[in-house]
Length: 127
Image (tube, rainbow, N blue to C red; front, side):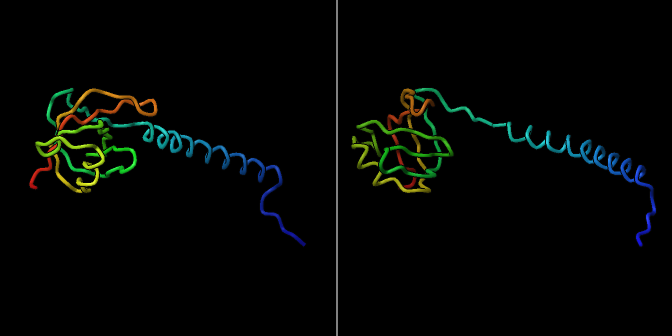
């Protein structure tokens, strides 16, 4: 034999109240998480012909691109590297991840619907 502490109607009302309470409490939690994910901080890069200094994060050997301080830069076919003219194939073989570099930026190019600076000249600091 089963004993009921609350009537069937009271159980239904209690379940409804608990459901509404959980929905009301979880709504702001979900909204606040989606709001924080939408915030992107961008740092400005200097304009063309201005110096820029940073640390090499990654060297893309096949696409001749460098990631420096989380920014993508493209290498033109001929680059001024350590005060001499080099091909971009030679430059990507000589630059290593972690190198501190000083660059003079060139014009903007488009890559996959995004703008990327080209590197006019690059010098490895401390080499």
